[in-house]
Length: 283
Image 1 (cartoon, rainbow, N blue to C red):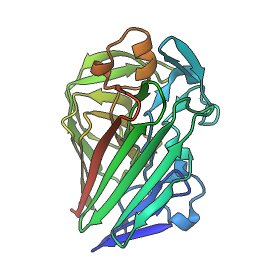
Image 2: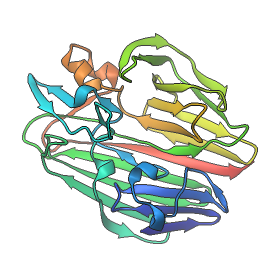
Image 3: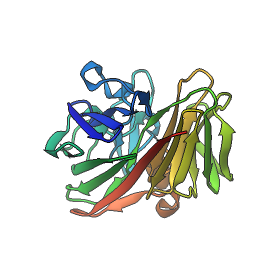
Image 4: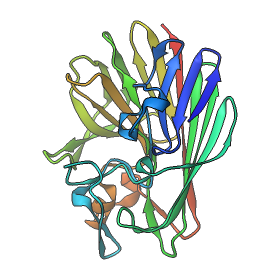
């Protein structure tokens, strides 16, 4: 376990459980859904985890790529899809760490969960009032490979929580949680208590705000797509910066434009990276 501290802001990281952020606190107040790292048993319970080498779902846990079908592991219980990549379920190595920063790495070799070799790294830097993260992936296979990045932070949903961000489109979802069509959408400015949403927004401005009577949180990212998930039964709001639309790899195989969906195709040895910062202050 790694604990970072900067002023009143504290962050605990559990490298063995998907390189996840177990918790983020401002003083006694949890910013993310937070569990002390020593009590964490799965990254699924964590405050945030990295999404690599893809975000959200690959339909039916079958990757269609360059004329070949690759069956993938269904890695989330009874769900029929592959979800959130592989990094969140694998142990990460700690390359460097000190009181306010950490550098983690994960090396993937082809297996039933993902057929392409890659290396990935993530940095976490804590300063007074903000947590900054960088996530990178390098294609180590001998052929071009699809790649995506993102994060899955779960923010605490308190009474009076309100989310606000700007976008230009939203992908509608089928009953099996896969995207069907894109519609024009300006984003959200809504009270979270009654909000029912599980969608990918694109044309995102790169800024999202979550405010309640106790905390003001601002999330910024270099990425331009945002998955938002919450409903009346949830005590969190997942606000997920991502590089590509849900199920983008199979949509590209069906004829969609990779660039429009945000999907990156990495040549052998090529890399891509993304940044995210969570700024927090008391209301």
